[in-house]
Length: 70
Length: 265
Image (cartoon, rainbow over all chains, first blue to last red; front, side):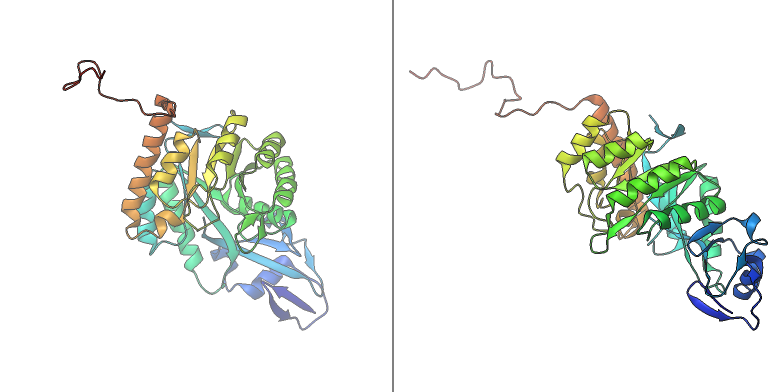
């Protein structure tokens, strides 16, 4: 199963769906140390929904963090 | 005299950006020197193995606490209403504020806001409980529609983002002020020098939002002070009541008993 996180492809060894929490573990070494918010296929996913939101083949996750802005 | 944004009273009429400064330390000094209590910031994809974004976030939190201020997340980079709404919800979760500088860009060349997508996004976000501060062009009807939707604050541009060209169309801006007397009007983007900010306040605008003009100055901290003073001057000038322009010259010095005067026959 292939998914994308911030545009980068991740190939999972199995075909079973994974939840957002598991996908974030692929992306961050220590997710709990970072401030971020998540969108799945351009739809916001709140933190309370990470465990129950499942990703399927071809899904795209955006993980955004604070940055300076004007 | 203070600025009110969605009922929150602020001592300064300057909303300031957090980008483009030579260093985080100079950013902090400039924000403090400006007197601003509203600081804009954003969300982006970042390298998960770098902690620079995390450090900046902590730094901005410290600044906001120090000035007893308010964060203003933006939706920079969004080109559709859907993107803006999603990014707004992500920002609200992280920054814990309903305030949102709504940006929906319609043209890459001059970063001009897309008025149609902007209206769609504003309507949805207001339904979702956001306090929307839309960045828009100086189009009177667009500003009116945004206000009618429930945007208590409207932020027309002075000129395109980052140009420093100042007030491109003072007539349009003055007309918006005249026709929307109850809206909180913040002039956003394109401001290049303190006199631009002063002019906006003299026109009756409630405040200005800027970033590049301070961050890209040779001395950002000194420029931040200059903007703070320019805003005070502009506000006091507006409140004091500016004299009406006259078509012809009128001598300031009394003409009675003018020396060397004599009757010409």
